[in-house]
Structures are given as structure tokens and as C-alpha cells.
Image (cartoon, rainbow over all chains, first blue to last red; front, side):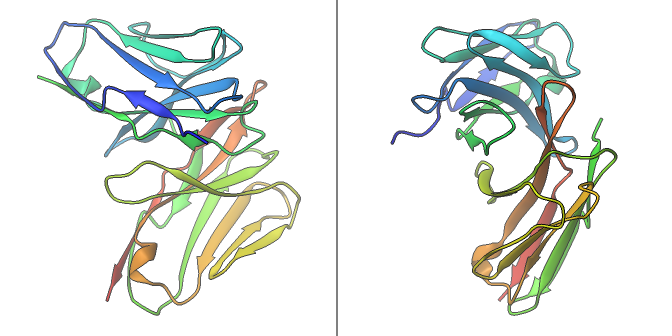
Length: 113
Length: 111
């Protein structure tokens, strides 16, 4: 079966711009979670969507937002980009959340200059 | 901040030596999951433990869940260069079970 697909793989943006990242989960998986990975902070939880509803949220500012569509595809948006937003953004899908293992996409490497 | 700590942060071993990473949570976990991330890659699910005191094996890897369901360990016997990567534990936290990852242990294996 197809894995988790994230697009784009790489992005370079300027401070102040906004960016939208996309994630297509495994077919049948209704839970999509987003993580930010940086060398200093490890894997930080951003949010989880389940059946088009945000079910969980991490400790990130309101500039970080997301949504999930009826086909379970998810997008996350970061507005007013800061240099510190440079990171690998990972999307993970699962059947129904943290009671099962997650399948991660390859990630989107965002660089803010 | 992180509520699931792992030690050590980094381990360098000679090929053939054993390796262990420990995971500690401040609260009881309903399950513990382990992931491996190769350099330049993304985390890959290895296993999930659910029961108190549970032990599971995958070839040279042995996973254990503590009796109090607050800690876990991953032991690799006779490491190989293919074992290189960062090993993360993860557990559900909060009322709605968001999956929180540990700080990770980076394993380097010298041939």
C-alpha cells in the first residue's frame, strides 16, 4: 500500500512569508499528526487531526495552524515565518491515534532565510 | 517541553558490542512505542508494548515495558553498522492521547 506522502520535500522561504505543507495519509487512516523536528528540540508535537477535527494541539504559537479534509489529507500552515521555524516538518498517520503505531512521511525540509 | 526523557543522548559502540537505551516518563503510559530514525530519514515504527512488565523481541532487539508502565528500555545485542540511527520512545499523553516522543538516543557503530 502507498505510504504517507508529504509535499513539497524542500522549501526555502523568506522571513515574514507564509507556507503551506501537505500530507496525504495511508488510505483508511483517519488520524494525522504533525511534528516539528530540529536538532536542538527533537520531535515536537504540533497538532493532531482526526476526522476533520483538531483533536490535540501542542505548545506552538497561533502562527501554526492546520486542517484536515474529508479524504483525510491534511495541510499545515505557518504564517509570518521566523528564522527559528527552519526545521523538518513530519506528518504521521495512524488508524485512530496514539493507540497504534504511526507511519511517518519523509518530511518537508523548510528553510527560512 | 519534553516529558519523556531518554538516556543516554548519544552512544558510540564498536560493532559487536551491546547497546541499551532507557526511556522514562513522568506519568503512567497506556502504551510505549519505539521508533528508529536513520540519518537523513524519518522515524520508522518498530514496536508497541502495552502490558506492565511486557518483553518483546525482534531478532537482536529486546524491548521491555516497566512494571509501573513509566519506563521502558531497548537493548540491542551484538550491534551492526545497520543499527546506526536515533532511537525514540513515544507514549500517549493527556486526555486525548497525543503521542509525545522522547528526547532520543543517537547510536553510532564503528566497524
